[in-house]
Image (cartoon, rainbow, N blue to C red):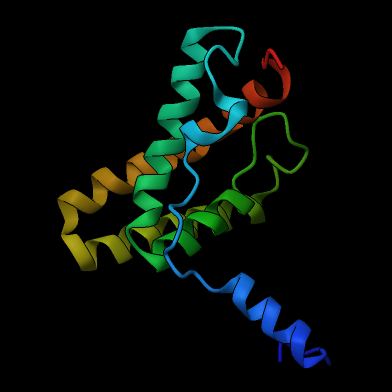
Length: 141
């Protein structure tokens, strides 16, 4: 019962709300009023943002384990201006996660495809810092 004591009626409502019954399609990028063009100061930033989000999403959507590894990589990759960027232990952990991503992909799709895909993941993760800047500082709304 979710680790909490819930009244039967409340517990049933929570279960119903959490069920994915497929009755309505998931929300998409285009469904959000936030991303109705023009939403950004430049079209180039809009395109960059969308391509990055869709690109990493497409890779992450393909495999539960890859989603987890990408999440770990996001947590350990620091932008240049971060005070943690120069910490060797964090950089080492990030490199180890990158290696895990490559090795996992290589076991699934072979070395060549793993190299291409892990390179894309690394690039998308680095691009997410620019996406955050775009979203925080260059939106029109």
